[in-house]
Each structure stands twice: as C-alpha cells, then as structure tokens.
Amino acid sequence: MKNHHFALMLLITLCWGFNVVPLKLALNELSPIAATALRFMLVLLLCAPFMRWHRGRMRLVTASAVLGGAMMFGLMNLAYSLSSNVSALAIAGQLGVPFSLIMAVLFLGERIRWRRTAGILLAFSGVAILTFDPAIAREWLPLALISASAMVWAVYTLLQRRFSGISALSLQGWLAAVSIPIMTVLSLVLEPGGFAPIVQKPWPVLGYLFYSALLSSVIGHAGFAWLLQRYPVSTLTPLTLLTPVFSVLFATLLLGNPFTLELLLGGLVTIAGIGVITVRTAQRAPSLPPITTVDPS
Image (cartoon, rainbow, N blue to C red; front, side, top):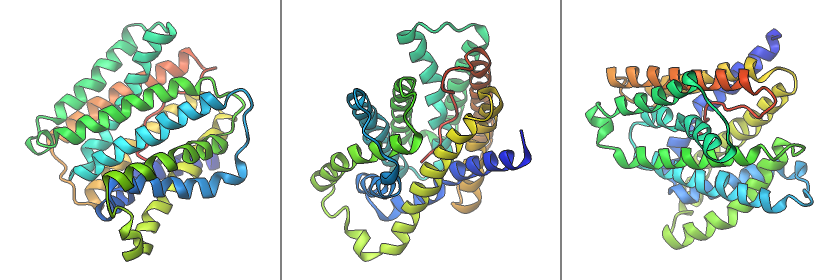
C-alpha cells in the first residue's frame, strides 16, 4: 500500500474511533432520537448532490435505509445516551461482525470452518469478560441495546451485498432521507421538547453532529469505498481493527472513562476474535463486500 493511501486509511479509522467523543457530548445535550434525526439531516445535506434514483432497487434501498439508518442508529444513540462508559459500548458494538457472519451462514449458506468459529466464540467471550467489571455490569441495558444495534447492522450488511453499482454517498443519502421522517415523528411523540437544545445551544450541538455526519459517515465511508476500488479486501480489513482501539483510547483520555483490567482483557479478546473473522473472511471471499469492524457513527 502506498504511504499516502495508508495515511488515508489511518485517518479513516481515527475518524471512526474518535466519533464516540462528539457522539457522547451531543447526547449529553440532546435526546437520542432527536440527535439521530438531526444527524441524518446533516448527512442528507452533504450527500444530496450525489443521490440517484436506482430504478428497480428502491424497495431494497428503502428497507436497507430503515435498518441501517433509523433502527441501527436509534438503538445505538439510545445506548450511548444511557451509558457512562462508552469504551465498553465501543467494544460491544463490534459484535456486528460475528452477527453478520452467523447470518451469512444461516441465510446465505456460507460455510465456515474452525478458525472463524473460534473467532465468533472469542468475540462473544470478550464482551462477556467486560461484565465482570461491576460498573459495566450495572449498565446491562445499554450493552443490550448496543448488541441489538449490532445485530441490525449485521442484517444491513447482508443487504449491502446486493448494492453493486450504487455509490456509497448515494446510499448514505437515501439512508438519511428515509430515516429523517421516521426519527422526527418518533422524537415529537416520545421526546417532547427533544429539539429544544438546538435553539438553546445551537453551535455546540450542531458542531458535534456535524463531525459525526461529515468526518465519520461521509468521509469515512466514502474514503473506505474509494480505497476498496484500489486494494484487496484482505489488505484493508485488518486495519479497521484500529477503530475500537482508538475509541477506547479517546474515551479514556477525553471523556474520563475508567480503564480497568476487565476492559483491557475483554477488549483484547473481542478484537482478537474480530481479527480472525475479518482476515479469514477477506482471504476466503475477496469478491464480496468486506466484513469490517463497526464504526460508532
């Protein structure tokens, strides 16, 4: 890989990993559903020039947008709003990788051997180790919500295999366009006054969300898609393992999250399992979209 392309990949994982900080800061000010709606408004604004009507595939695009937009981000933002330890959520959110492989086995007939089976077991075992930390165990509801979000993401990745010919920016735009009305109505019904902080503290809130929308979603995903056109999946997917590492690092340094032995061991075991799955999947099926780590965007 050329040095400037490696630097771009490192920047992408930094953007994805750092995103836990503005996400948590935004959710300290905004209710989770309103934050999701506003984030997608910014994504739509940025991606609108690249959107195209995909004849014959709009039902699939719409269904995927509901899953990968409203459902996944709604559950994720709710989890982050309820949790004080985003490091644990950043690690548990990686369960989308083994979930996606399990669903590929169940619904697509994909066959796996002992290495990827061991990777699945390691990933879930690592998250289980996290719960030996009493402070993390008390936050079982956010962990359950982020796990549900990871499962929804896994279904979304299966649908992505049918998106050949659709650009990443067009797909992000449709994902936002479909999700905005859903999340806006839900916020108005379930979170009265949920949008009020935009009037009271417009610049901090919009700044956090703009980072999430621009750097994490648009630049991160579009940049990764651009690199995939130039390098094999097996070259890029191992580098995505840096994302949860950066998330834990930034959460510890900037948000003051405790760095415990359980978090260290659980994170290492989970990342080891994710690494086995991503690398082996990339080596065995280079023509398919990659199974990568999950960015908390």
